[in-house]
Image 1: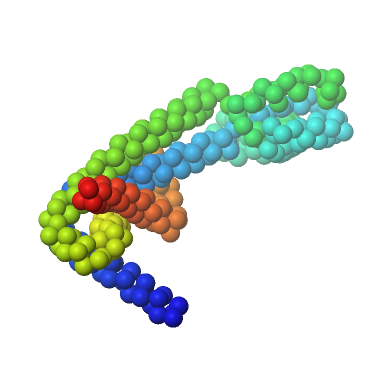
Image 2: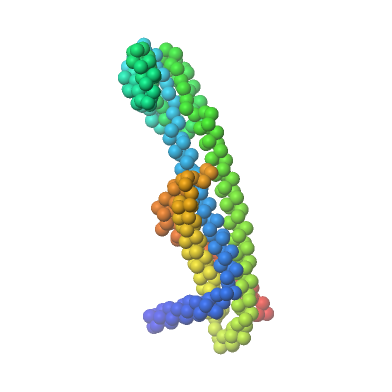
Length: 320
């Protein structure tokens, strides 16, 4: 008995889905505007996610190149340097600390100036004037002052006047602030645009479903006289709207993929302003199977909610 009831429910569900698909075919041209606006909405959602991830990656790359160099006097002992390194590694603001000896500093200098014969000869004649140093990688460049405060306290580290230099400043600081500001603005604009187009999409789908219900009002009346449930009447319209969302999601994903293909082949540079096209395309393809279900979910949600509201309003009106 229970199996028969289950089979009957499954058969009803299949009929609802089948009817919804048939109705979608009938109203395909009528729903073109709804699917077009939904495609724009979902395209903005997808592009905002990719752009935000790309800009965050750019900030992380710049942050990874920022360090603090502590140049140690020639009289600094190994024990003093080790003590300072241990102290720094214990700070939550420090990601890593590396010791660069005088010989390593000279080798780095020669490698960086391998094409300048004058500098090579000058450093050879003066011996090795380069000091040993500590390269400190901060977790957050904005909290470098905390690390500097520790180094500036000679009593705590037992060093004699260490010289401190930070690569965080000038153009790098301006670049990070610029990208962070752009990321914040893009997120806000993206949210506003998504909400705006989502509302427009829902209104268009709402009107589309209302029109479809009006066109089939005689059919619906007959179904109600025959005892069809509200769910059975409402279901096909919800399925129809869900198909709008599915198709719009697939088009938006394909559209973004096409955009990246055209950008990669049409631009000689690998970046467009602050947006690294290569990384954005790589992020899109690397997270494709995460982004696709997200797009489908948003599209289905918009379609289902708008059609449910539309059908409830119509059925409520008819039941009076």
